[in-house]
Length: 148
Image 1 (spheres, rainbow, N blue to C red):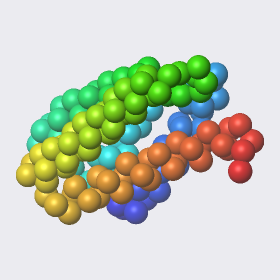
Image 2: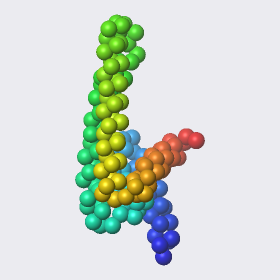
Image 3: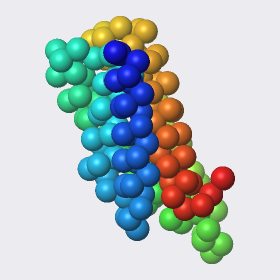
Image 4: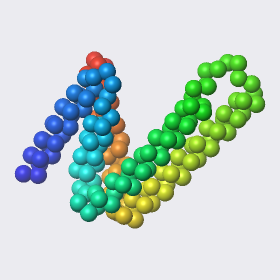
């Protein structure tokens, strides 16, 4: 019975991911909903665990997104500028390194919170689930757009 549920879940997940990339712009709300279902299933979260986990995860993701945006606007958008002075390049590099350190600290604090809330084992499962989810999204995108 459980095996059938998992197979059904994966089939629905893959169909939805593939369809969500059928549009020019991916529907980030759909992707987020798929992620919630994917992680909840992979981590075997109870309703109490999910209730505690998701607000912390959402806050973490929001902070990561903000740092990524800051990094893009502060660094990557100026990366190809050949007219940048050495002083400006040094400042950009320092900003980049600072954001990298912030991301590392954010990741570490998040993992410790999750470990305390769930367990070390479920925290490792989360790391794997994040990688697997990214792979599924990429696979769905490639399938839809004729890639490898």
